View 1 (cartoon, helix red, strand yellow):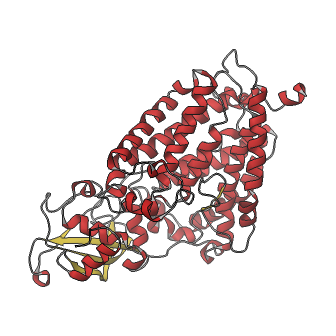
View 2 (cartoon, rainbow, N blue to C red; view 1 turned 90 degrees about the vertical axis):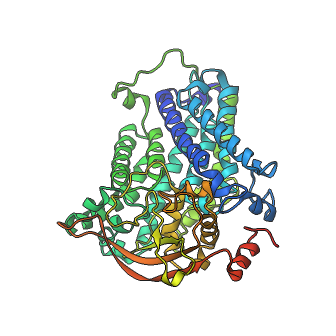
Length: 490
C-alpha cells in the first residue's frame, strides 16, 4: 500500500509547486489591491452597490461570506488590507517555511476572504476570472509547504481547471457568433473589446488575412492544445502548455482583460515538471520530503469531490446550450468557463457630462473622463491589465442596453451629483474639482479607431441621449433611488 501511495507523491513537481504558489499569490495580491483601492466606493456603506443592502436581501447559504458578521466599511477595509498582507507573505514564500499548518491556514484564509468579497460583489464581481481564482485558490490549499512534495493528484486537478478554461473558451466560439465560423471576428475584436490598450489600434490595423489566420490559431490554442494538457507524457503536455502560454501572452499585449490571461498562464504551470523547469535554470531544492500519507489521502478525497462536482461543467462543455462562466455552487469550487462567444461589431460608449448651470437646456456641459474606457477621442488608451478598473469595465456593458439593464448607474450618477470623494476616485478626472454639479446626463456615441494618418486615437459619432439630465430634486429619480435602498426614505 505504501509503495502505491508513493506513486502519487509529486517528487517531480517541487519547483512546479513553488512557481505556481508564488504566481497565484501575485494574482491574489492584485485582487486584494483592487478591493483596497475600490471596494469602499463600489460596495461600502455609501458605495454604488452597498454590500449591507445586498446582505439584508439574501441568506448565508445563498452567498456565504464573512461579511454577514460585519458588513461595515471598517470590515471591508480591514479584510482587504489583511488580504494584501497575506498575499505578500505567500508571494515571497514566507507562508511555506513553517510547515503544514501555516501553509494550509494561509491558503485557506486567502480563499475564504476573497470568496467573502466575491459573494457580496454583485455586478462588479460576476466574471469568470473571479470564479477561476477561487477554484484555483481552493486547490492550492492542498499543495503543502515548501519542504514537502505536492500530491500529484492536486497537480492534475489544476491541469483539469486549465483544460476546462481553455476548452470551454474554444467550444463557446464554435457554437457562438457566426463571425467565428467565417473567420472575421478579429476584424472587430481589438476595437470593440471592453478596454483596449495602446497596442490594440495597431493589432486592429493588421491585414485581414492575419485576422482570419488568428481565428484559426485561436481554435488550435483553445480546442486542440488543451487536449495535450491532459496527456501524462511530459514532452506533450509541455509543448501544449507553451502553445497556451504564447496564445495568452498575445492577448495580454493586445488588450486589457484584467488578470484573466495571467491566471490562464499560471494554470499552465502544473503542466511542466521539474525536469523541464530545471532546463530554465530553476534549481531543485535539497531535502524535499515525500508527501505524507494523510496528505495523500486528503488529495484522494479532494479528487473524488472534484470528479463528482465536474459532472455539471462537463455536460455544459458538450451541451448545445453551453453557458459561459457559470458557478455550480456558492463556493465556486468547480465552474465552467468561456470567453467571447460573441464579438460586438460596433463600439458603443456612454459619455457622462455634468453642468453647474441651473437650466440644463442652455447649460455648458463638461465631460467626466474615465481612467481606461474611451471618452476623449484624442486620449491614448490606457494600460490596465492585470489591474482592473471595475467601473470602466461595467460602463462597457451598460452601453449594450438602456439603464434598466444597468440600474446601478443611477446610483453612480447620484454619487457624482453629491461629489462623493470615494466614487470620484474611481474615475479619471472630476471636471468640477470636488464641487457638486447641478445636473448630470449621459450621451450615447459610437466609437471607431481613428483612420491611419489622422490625429487622435478614436473617431466617434453621436447617437443620441442615453439618460436625460438628472438631479436629486427630480422626484421620480429619487423614488428609484429610494426603492433600491440607495437613499433613505423620507
